[in-house]
Length: 191
Ligand code: FNR
Image (cartoon, rainbow, N blue to C red; front, side, top):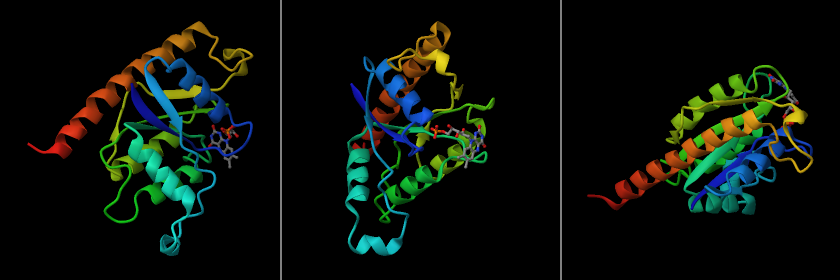
């Protein structure tokens, strides 16, 4: 089974994006292994810190190296993705020549109580992931309007239609990670 590093862009305890990511991870457990890579303890990016690299940065880079793909779960802050995600991405692109994101299959999901369900945040993140040389899945998009009644007491997706929609997304992302991570391994091995 392929392994996916999950980065959640909200750091707060009661984050709906964290809850959403947890329930998607449980729903996907028969198809993908989701391993959460925590980004809340990364210092703000500072080039000087490479003189004695912070352990959380090295840990995240190890976790990304072990992952076949990456899932970004972003809240929407002022129509943009969260600064925690930008900070993690910047650390991952360095040191020069060791870009942790390079050629990794990726997807973005996110949730908000607002009617646009993080659509604007996700669109801003898409542009950045392309610059980082990730292989981004374009469809289906998951602009999820968070409603507590869609989940049961354990935090699993209880609503039938929502479950079916997320299952289709998981199937597609599983295929995306399988196909693009294998192509990547082939390319690295050479002709
Ligand atoms: C928000 N929120 C928000 N929601 C939205 O749909 N579009 C937006 O542009 C914004 N902007 C915004 C800015 C800032 C600074 C905050 C703190 C919040 C509301 C946001 O969706 C809501 O607080 C979510 O609960 C945040 O996600 P987590 O932290 O619960 O995962």
